[in-house]
Image (cartoon, rainbow, N blue to C red; front, side):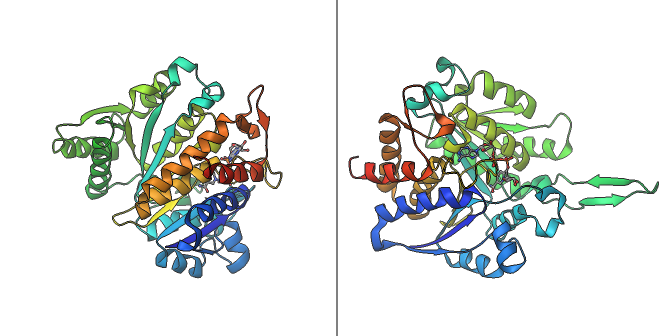
Length: 355
Ligand code: NAD
C-alpha cells in the first residue's frame, strides 16, 4: 500500500501528522508513506505549487493523504504561483472528479452544531461535489483590459454533458447504498450551463427509477440546508456550489474541523483531505482539530483499499474520544476537557485499542 502524504501549508501539516499516526497504528508495516511538498511549500521547495516530483509521487501512489494549502495574501500574487493551484492541478491531472463530503453529526457533538438539536439529530448527508469542471477550470479566464481601456475580470462556467453524466451516475449509485434520494443543485433558472446540468442529471436519473430525484436552485438549497438539513441524503452539485454548500454543512456537524472528504475518479486511487483550509489564524498553536483529517484517513482505507473494518474502527475511536469528553477549541463545550491537536491525535490512537 503506497500512500503519498502531502501536508501542504499551515495547519495542513499539523492535522496530517495526526492522521498519519492513526494510519500507522492501524496498518503497521503494511503501508509505505512518502511525503512531498505542495502549495506554498511546493513554491518554497521547487518554485511551483505542484512540483513535478510531487505529481509523480501522487501518480505512482495508491492513495494520497492531503492537508491544506494556502496562506495570507495568496489572492494578490501571480496565479501560477498560488498554492491553491497545486491542489486544483493535482485533482485534474489525476482525474479525480467526484468529491464526497459526508456531513455526519456525531451524537456527542449535537450541542456544538450551529442548529437546534431537533433539526440536526441523526444528520447524515453527503455532498457530492463535481471536481474537474465548472468556473474553476473554464476558459477564457483572466483579468483583461477592455475596449474602453478598463480592467475586466472574466471566468467561464463550463460543463460538458459527459462530465455531468459521470458525476450523476456516481450520485445515483451512492444513493442506492443509502436512503435512495438524490437532490441535484443548480442555477438552471439563470445559467445555460446549469440548464444542461439539470437536463442531463434528469436524463441519467431515468436509469435509476428506484432513486428519488429532486432539483433545487442553489439559493433554495442553501436555505433548506440550514432550515431542514435532514431532508437530504445525497446532494450532487457543480464544483463551485459544492465548495460553498459543504462549508455550510460543516457547521451543522459542529465545526469545519469535523468534515472529511474523499476525491475519487474511475479507479481506486483517491485523494483524501479535510474540507478546511490552512487556517493561518491558528497555525503553529496546537489548536487545530485533527478529526477531519483523521476521518479522511478512514475514508482512504474504505475507498482506496476496501478496508471497511479498519475504517469503521477509526470512526469508532473518534467517537469514543468524543464520548470521553475531549474537545479541541473549535468544538469546545461546557464541562468537556480542552485538548490540543497532538493530544487529540494521540487520544484517537489510544482509543483504537479499546474499540
Ligand atoms: P479555513 O478553512 O482555513 O479557516 C476558516 C476558519 O475555520 C478559521 O477561523 C480557522 O481557524 C477555522 N478552522 C479551519 N480548520 C480548522 C480546524 N481543523 N480546527 C479548528 N479550526 C479550524 O479557511 P480560510 O480562512 O478561508 O482560508 C485560509 C487559507 O486556506 C486560504 O489561503 C485559502 O485559500 C486556503 N484554503 C485551502 C483549502 C484546501 O487546501 N483544500 C480549502 C479552503 C481554504
